[in-house]
Length: 305
Ligand SMILES: NC(=O)c1ccc[n+]([C@@H]2O[C@H](COP(=O)([O-])OP(=O)(O)OC[C@H]3O[C@@H](n4cnc5c(N)ncnc54)[C@H](OP(=O)(O)O)[C@@H]3O)[C@@H](O)[C@H]2O)c1
Image (cartoon, rainbow, N blue to C red; front, side, top):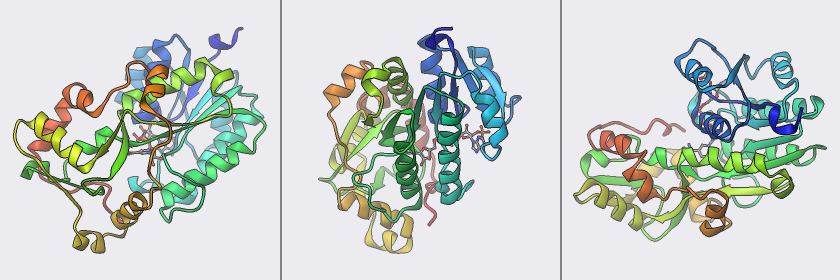
């Protein structure tokens, strides 16, 4: 059987990144094996209907992961992280390193691990960044072909209720003149499909994934244009940051350059010609979420320390 007739095992396939990867791999003609907790869930059934093979298992269950890897060509590895409230940082690290070890043991040819954009390997002080830095280091030491992709903040996050859009504001980490990289979740899958298609080029590589790099002032202009009325951008106030150590640590990472992107958009667009800017995402796939956020009050779900 040639390599691209063997399946790629996709973790988190019912979630954002894994779902995007499963869709892009199926479109590219790969057999996709989706590792799911509940094969009867609506997202699992949608994957099956789209052509994926479902294998049932949990990240806690090494035997299930081993079974799922049998005969697989590749693995896409993603783990939930502590801001979701469902796992600890230590669990994220354990799950990520176990998948890498089991892939080597199972003879998987290409492991693609999704981390997060960060500069430098020194601890950041944010648990769900540092867990990823340790998983990356573990992977690099293994005798296997791997690629690390590091997505920027998801554009989807910018259209979540809780940043003030319902009150014609947008409050975020950046100062007006500071920039940060963002990516549409749909593009993560397209990049990962390109990586699996060319292991000779991407094997051993680490690639930042982003479709736009935006300042606070640019976010203000794009939101204002998309809403058709003024949306005022402001950085979180010192009082908000003093009350919330999680936001304060993220903001400090922006300030000291640890969340900046490496690489350039032209090169990324050559890998993924359909790469979306925030403007195109807001007018397309993100439009509905943005309109909902304009009309929904609430607090950001990830704002717990
Ligand atoms: N948000 C951002 O801007 C951003 C940027 C860069 C990186 N990240 C990182 O992205 C990661 C999360 O990715 P995502 O947003 O794609 O996640 P997500 O949408 O929350 O999906 C999580 C997936 O993991 C599965 N899962 C959860 N616990 C499991 C378990 N114990 N066993 C098996 N499967 C399990 C879920 O399955 P069920 O359907 O069964 O729940 C789901 O498919 C985090 O590590 C985060 O730090 C986020």
